[in-house]
Length: 147
Figure (cartoon, rainbow, N blue to C red):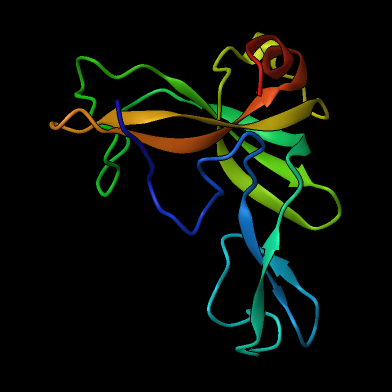
């Protein structure tokens, strides 16, 4: 079974320790995700690749309880859709990232809890290729599943 990242410039994959690929402005040192072609703070086009920390803090969260509208391409239908967690994860002092969460039960999530980056299946294409995306898991859950 072949696995591919949903986009090659968003996270390092394949990797035993995947990281999100952000950008750091060479002029004002602003850090953003995903990596832009120009800096939103100062307008510079000198934005370098900057790998973000694998662990972060859950800043806020909700549950996506309905099938997202296009351009979402997860492969589900209204009948097969399963709710998933969505959160804002603060990665160090660098940046806050909106991300899918591996946990969708609000009772299992706490603002301020430590999360770790995971690479998870997003959809399976007709040819059998598994398209992977990133999500954050509670550290205890991530440790129980391996890297």
